[in-house]
Amino acid sequence: MVETARSLTVAVNSHPVVRVLLGSRCSVSLIVWSLVGCILMIHFYSLIHQKDREKIHIGSSHLSVTRELEEVEEENLYFPPPRGKRSPHALKRRGPRKPPSVVDEFLDESSEVHALFFPHRKSAVNPNKKGNDSMYYYPGRLWLDTEGNPIQAHGGGILFDERTETYYWYGENKDGPTYQAHRKGAARVDIIGVSCYSSKDLWEWTNEGVVLSGEETNASHDLHVSNVLERPKVIYNDVSGRYVMWMHIDDANYTKASVGVAVSDSPTGPFTYLYSFRPHGFDSRDMTIFKDDDGKAYLIYSSEDNSELHVGPLTDDYLNVTSVMRRILVAQHREAPALFKYQGTYYMITSGCTGWAPNRALAHAAESIMGPWETMGNPCIGGNKIFRSTTFFAQSTFVVPLLGLPGSFIFMADRWNPSELRDSRYMWLPLTVGGMADEPLEYNFGFPLWSRVSIYWHRRWRLPEGWRTA
Ligand code: DGJ
Image (cartoon, rainbow, N blue to C red; front, side):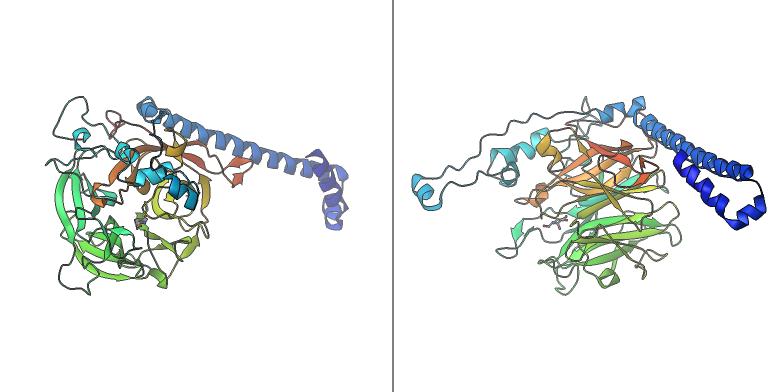
């Protein structure tokens, strides 16, 4: 710094205009040193400011109410040895078979490992059975609604409706037989529609019925049962006073790759289906929508054969996209985007692209929703290595902000069961923002720009008492 100041002094002194204006060597040095002082002050200010930001993060993430959410719990699951030894004959013919991975076993419905991850009804979370388990989330267990039926809201999202002060959970109703349309096709369930559940506490859910139904007769309709309707999300438009649903619309082979839009005057429907289209002229598969604090809403979708994501604002009525679009996370091959915002920064969780099979989640951050977005690493904490590398055997779908607990969110994911999709499970886990990111690339005066996003594994957890007003 001293060296730089010296050369700066020399450079400024030798400038003829400066010589004329200032006359003396002494006053030039004074100016240069004042400049250096200013730079140092800005630097220190930025350090202090950064420390403050960290203090806010650490403070909010270590509030006694949220401490329990952030406990790192290990998971020592016993995995039975892989089955399927080869006969000596087959051994000779084809050589030793690669033992199936834990993920292979997880996906194989006849394996004991599979049963571990899809415990049966006896252990279901049941809001009608009040007792010690009341208000506790058990990620991966069956979750019943207030009528005692398994909740059918896969690939879903949550809307907090300020008018009714109620949470609404929208998702795919997959309560039909799983089959393959073609020998090599993905496992599927015919379109039944979008289910809606309501709740005041995010734990006890009342079935509000199918708010957008599949079409049984008209084979050319987007919602014909033979097609695909995935990842429905609903936001409220303050200007039109209408609830707007966006979803992934496809054919059984996933070649239509479009978004669909539906509207309703009520959060519990019925929703009127409007149309489908390829946003900005591009293929669109996994998608989500995000409503910002200023009322502007955005569509984020996997495109170019899932190799990148696209983001663009919706029109003011939320019924279409505008012509503005940015490519983000290019060549990163991510899907299942779930967005949220904290202290002015945008965050997103995504998955890799492996069909119904689980893979590693990544967290991303951006100063502007339109990008650039930066990838920060795997947000999953606790469990064990294989849990963390498979997003706890699940895939992201949505992040719910907890308004009374700044910096705390619920991470919603689907544990898909491709052999019986209706039996796929919900993985709700606490997500917090705070502390140093693992792999930040962007620095601000030597400090990483982004805070860490952490998703904590818990076998059993609940929101802290009074989380709505904390
Ligand atoms: C992964 C996606 O995230 C799901 O929504 C679904 O489209 C499956 N692929 C189908 O294989």
